[in-house]
Length: 110
Image (tube, rainbow, N blue to C red; front, top):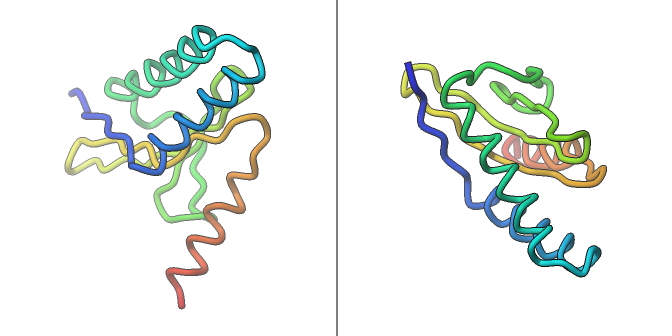
């Protein structure tokens, strides 16, 4: 069974910000592009093994997280019925992903 992998608009925007940050910090757009492309490739491999990572139902029901090269956290959700993996966030360099999902969850409750 192969799942489709989709990037939420927020995750796509986060990848663009990461690429711009690395390009500026490393003074190399090529390095930045290669790094972001590698993250995307890693995420696309969820199509074969979607249930990896750690469940974080405490932040959002169905949320899973995994690390990429120890410097990025990828947040995603798996819909077993629709055979879809949704990448909902990509956080780089120690960004507090937990706070992002806690704030979203609190807004949904109000």
